[in-house]
Image (cartoon, rainbow, N blue to C red):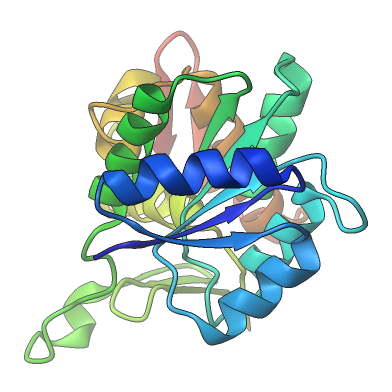
Length: 234
């Protein structure tokens, strides 16, 4: 049974989510604040987080930043549930590391579809066979090292913190150096063919990756934009 952590400061929304998700076979944990959500994550095994943006005290963006910076649970998928439906807010949510973004009010059937799609995409991640030679899962390009088995990235020997999707995107491009991927290709391969979203998602994640692995002129340009087509790893 998958466990979902629902985070919202409105009790009736938490009750509604719990009722419908439990009917669909999920175990539901509830938190009315970001601080409580982080406490639950520290002690409970959670498969996915449904996170409201407008929370009292620590808001959803800050909660997501703390989730992505904690090695104990930084890979947990997060879906934002929020009334902030403008494009800028969506971009901010994606930049911080959300896996999906659903605007209130939303239908419960759409939410269930999004949850299943995200869980499908992340299922089995990191469960590499112990017998498999780790060297087969490591890419070294100049100062950049990508370890698929450990799901780590280092630059000049320093660990680079990446979200789940940023890592998947980087590994796909690096493993297929020189091959141009359209934004639709990347959406299908990294987010899944059933992802409900826009190609702008890809641009945001590429921009984040560049900031993290192409910090200054001493580092090569790893990810190149192919005008009118998409992206490739140089």
